[in-house]
Image (cartoon, rainbow, N blue to C red; front, side, top):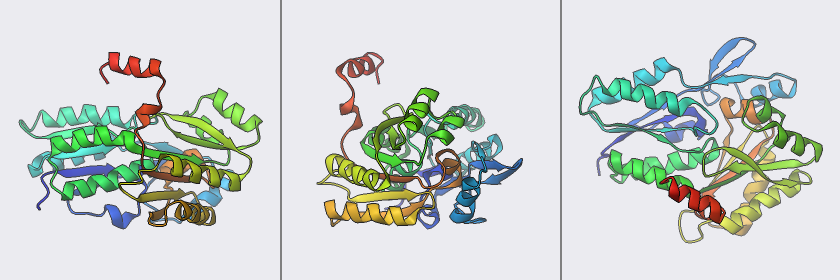
Length: 307
């Protein structure tokens, strides 16, 4: 079946490059800045994970910038000129301004192409969970979803992407403005390994702590066992920031829970890596509707707001 829409994705999905080099899928790069020099987040084509994260271990503090306005405008123009309805799956607005910028620019470009179908979706995810959503979106595209159907699918499917990740400390996330100071201070004071996830609004939050990395990996595996979709997709993404041995250990724990799990271990790219630091491990999978974990008061509030 010929695809009925094209996709635009960004490098924050952190999937293996060969998985996203698909005809009809346009890939945009975030950027990182190190020693006043700007580099593209290029899936480690020009450096290696070890080189990048060893730099951070040695004290480097790279910063990041979203997809440039020029790159966004060029991609949207290509999409409209192609005449093929297109959907951009953007990293979470809860940790980046990229979605708002992209939404504004898409409207501007569409004004020059009356009737063009171009949509921008806030995945409310980043890194490994965004990658899981993108991977399935590519599959759904191949099965014939139209652009408008893809938008509706993505805006519902994002709530069924479950993730948990462990970082060595919270300093990098706090410095980058991705976590409140109070959360970072609490995590550091406890001298533990923080476990985090994305909430239903696409923001980061600390959900648990572990006394050591080994226990942290077991807690992530237990989270997988509790929340996974035992009757559906068995794809599991495990991301690592230059700590492949820990990623492999987590993969072994996942296999104990579900021997049929299709585990994909991948590298955490420079954009997300700049904020989480070396030795982060993440696990994402299809599972329970995360909206169900909201308190009754929050569910009422979302209903009132029409979400």
